[in-house]
Image 1 (cartoon, one colour):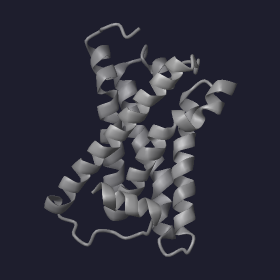
Image 2 (spheres, one colour; image 1 turned 135 degrees about the vertical axis):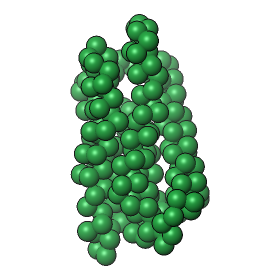
Image 3 (cartoon, helix red, strand yellow; image 1 turned 45 degrees about the horizontal axis):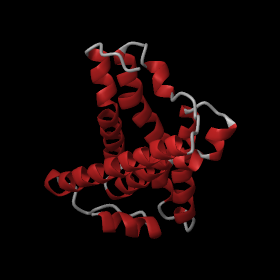
Image 4 (cartoon, helix red, strand yellow; image 1 turned 90 degrees about the horizontal axis):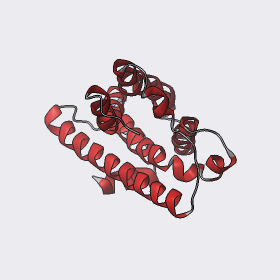
Length: 184
């Protein structure tokens, strides 16, 4: 599966799986989600290590602003609203470009825009801008997987993938909030 994503990354072509049954798609979906999460956690660990080693101050993450708000709001924003809006905006148009000779560069631009859009989750300082490629590497990597799911499965699968990805990443924070365990 990872090889298929790699080959897609090298040469993105709009091609949907001819089989649409759950027995075929669901195992692939689960494996892709696992790889996307592993890469994101890996980039997160690398980012934390580099911030510590280089003594970088990147300020607060936007999720910290939601910690004090209602849990349902945090859940709704991260798991429902963001996947719906971001997939519609960033990967929805890929369908209309599938026959375009510019699909490949457009896919790369959309993936990078998706990743760098998430720099807005950080306080914009000279330091965050300087290290922005590292800070948004998790979003760029998941953007590749989301693009793959979008063109091989369809847009609805990409929205669900994004929602599950965010849910899994947000679960510890949601649990801390629900159990009223102090985070800081």
